[in-house]
Image 1 (cartoon, each protein chain N blue to C red):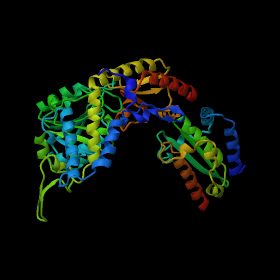
Image 2 (cartoon, each protein chain N blue to C red):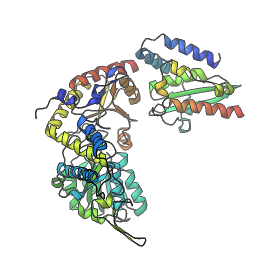
Image 3 (tube, each protein chain N blue to C red):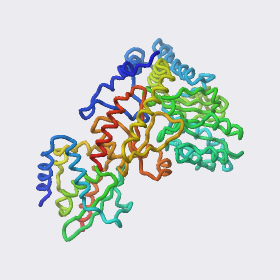
Image 4 (cartoon, each protein chain N blue to C red):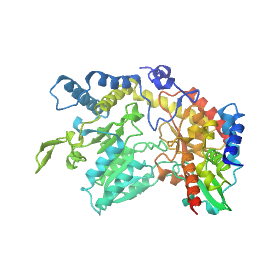
Length: 138
Length: 405
């Protein structure tokens, strides 16, 4: 599935919820089901800066696709990471670089994108794009 | 004056607003306090009616502004029972005040000297001293904590020696709310000839400190913690000390005579107030003290203690609730975690319910390290908070825990 299709799918899922509480409960569920990063990759160099809870992100290239894995001490941050990984993981670097992220606004998570929020969502997206740029050159 | 919280709440316009669709419940008072209309009006009044630069103007509104600024200094002097108004330096706040003293002591200390700092300190109380020690080689010794979140007084006594030149302790811990026994710390330190600086930032909204009675050498606070504006605070220093210290910044107002060969400095307090000061801030600071004194610190203290006990008892009923800092004497601050949940998660959900709390390390990493935790949720109550808000907070916290578990 391409990045746009995944985004549309997520927007559709979130549109079923009536209020913020249901949206957050779903995100927390996603956080619990995230495919965790290998403990050996939970190292400081994989930490995302600007986050009040520790948030790790690991990337590796398999064939022509980038596989991301993440973990966080905070479950909401983990849920946000899970949503982002669903969009970006298992995509080609080129597609990741070109991807536009309109879905975040549509699923009511825009508040988490402010650079002053201490959850690292924005930094995480940046880091994902950096990885894509780095692997695209290779 | 009888204490009526509902009447007091009318003084604070912000308490009427909603956040995320819910009435705002503001429990982040240890970070900054809300401002009453009287303070807000004093700021508007200054800009609308007598905004002018102070001290050197010969015209009328400059004189009015100068009087208002110096009146504010006198209000601060009176509030803290300071002997002379020139011992009150108006600064941008506690951090500025501490840096001013640290800078002043750079040349007064050498590599054989020691300074004692408590493990309870806010980062702003640690870093300036580390910077000073890099320059003069003096050594920092740390007064450890007990598991109740109190200072280990016996360790403090053991650390004191003839080498001790300075002791730095906060009056109240920002992370835990512990009230430190500063009176005995000051007198013990003086027995060894050490000077004492007390950071009163977290204390001033709860406790009226009598600085002559305490016989402290330096005391500092920030106005925004006590219903005043941001960007203004004060440093009290005994004039013997202030006279010994060199100026912190060069500029206008702090000079007496200037030639290219030599400048002579102005007298206290102006020697430490370079440049155009925060005039309107000082006026707001003075008004905030008037406001609080009108309510009465006895009333504030007893009502806040009532809120603290009420909240502590209620919160302890929540499964997995763990409180950090159970000092016998503490202000209305509750630092806690619930089970294994991360403070960030709890804070995020509480915000969705319109409740403002602080999460994380509270600029006090050593305190968090002591307890071996990455952070806490901190709810801090003020005299304008209510038991109904605490009920709503407890209910919302339980919902947050259920969602996150």
